[in-house]
Length: 329
Ligand SMILES: [Mg+2]
Image (cartoon, rainbow, N blue to C red; front, side, top):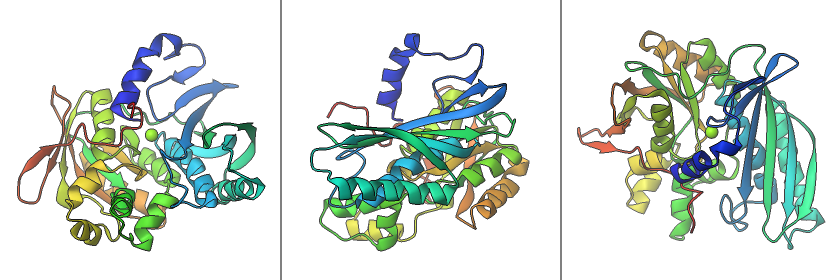
């Protein structure tokens, strides 16, 4: 969620529940945590809209179904929960025939199989614009969720998953170039890392968020929630396969694509410094050896800024960079 969306949500707060009986975590995190029959259950909901989150000439309907579930699995991962069940509300655009809708559901099903989620129902309505809204329920097995507001100064920042792939793919498409198949796949069928989220929790993570709006924007949310700043080492960032080559071809800065692009669905965690290397290794191993690295540390900073230190020593404030869905356009 972008800063603009967050500001809108904050204005709506009087209508929302932040706490109370049966609520472990209300609005303001990757997902809510509620008590059902005494047990904590994570609830995540995310919508993806044609023309905003995908283009019909880039993504096949099966890709769209996959993405709609993946973004919610990622929010469960960002609470350290195991995604269990999902429902889907489909806004059926005028051009979506039976074959298109069937292919959407085949993509949803493929993602559900991949992450062990049961797709247990939903709704279909006709609408002027196509969209999918998915709700996923996550199991915490009785443990507390890892929120985004628990970090302290002096902790290590761990990134699990690659950065910049979708940004590079979209930047290439915008100028009429062909992105590599790996970059294109990262946009069409994004990953999610729920096993890594649970591994980070076991390793002592104090704060956790997924990287949906861009490293700078999402670390900014973690920093403001926790009351800390962040210093990130650009050379340590796990870059998407082919990003460096694509950035050179596009005459773009690879750090800008990696730190500001969004839709990476990497996990960002604050971890006590002495546990950081082990946490990164455990999170990587839990997801079959995906990239994971200690990328920097939290610092005491009243401005709650996210500063990226480039290899030449230059420092950029990336707190505001990110993917802004909520702005009027
Ligand atoms: Mg999130």
